[in-house]
Length: 405
Ligand code: ATP
Ligand code: MG
Image (cartoon, rainbow, N blue to C red; front, top):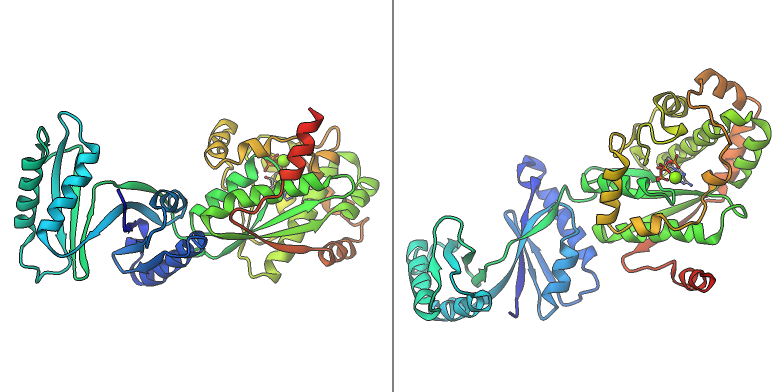
């Protein structure tokens, strides 16, 4: 079928009272941004629905993208027909015929936003339903749980027909919950944490620490590619790369090995907070899950968290690894995350990190370091780029990687 528009139904939005208009406007902006490479689309956001006019664009490709935008409950591809019942009947039969097989059941469900239309909803249901029964032999009407509900919507500018309802991504439009910084490594957990934060409406910026020459260009590209994987939910994401080499070398040199990891993480958190303050972020997100590794005991979290009063939110904190992996597979970050490019933490990981570090010790060891100077030099080297849907960073590397195999 050649669809003419996609009709979008809002999710939790409808419960947001006074903020409803700003939520809808935000959703419309996100939808437009996420579909920016379909130039013929026209998106109109009304209070109850959003209408995306296709103007010839491929409905399947558009719907695939739309399925990733948060704040959408579901959507239906629709066909616009003249306000003429004969036309409606003809197109309705064409639509259902496509899906017909023996024993298929249907019902017609009409809505009118134009209450002046010559027929009311019951009359329309009867006329259109009767015509379908007469013209598709073997099809049956069923009021409760039919195979297809043919939805007919009478509007001032035409009559719209649809029979499919496709689930959207749910959640809240990204941006309606404010801005947060996500600490993004190259691992499995932090991209999932970022996805979950976005799902609840947080506009995230990626903060990635890297340590050349100990970490390769590939490790950096991997983090960028992971970011690109998350862009379809928003359109584009800012990627902040923070040089971490001097800090890691200094910490390694001056801090006892049991506290290397704790002190490094305290620096990461301080730097992320500094970036948040500069860029109006309200919270820090990371991919820590309780009990996974030495840095993720409650004692360790407490010793690291000691350096900031900004909320540190851990969306995957209580998940099992398997649960996190399942989401990583769904959002297609898993295969990338398990590619073997070492990031800065693995390389400087001490052989036996303390699983129960003490806050007072961590503070004490840091007195040996020029914390402010180290932070300032790192912040001076920060580089920010904007990553958009479809950007790729791994291609060349993948090729040379393949050659090695
Ligand atoms: P992940 O799978 O996200 O790497 P992990 O289970 O491997 O998590 P760690 O490596 O201990 O755990 O890291 C814990 C969290 O610290 C990460 O989820 C991430 O939020 C943050 N983090 C670790 N390394 C980096 C890095 N190089 N840049 C930015 N954030 C990092
Ligand atoms: Mg990791």
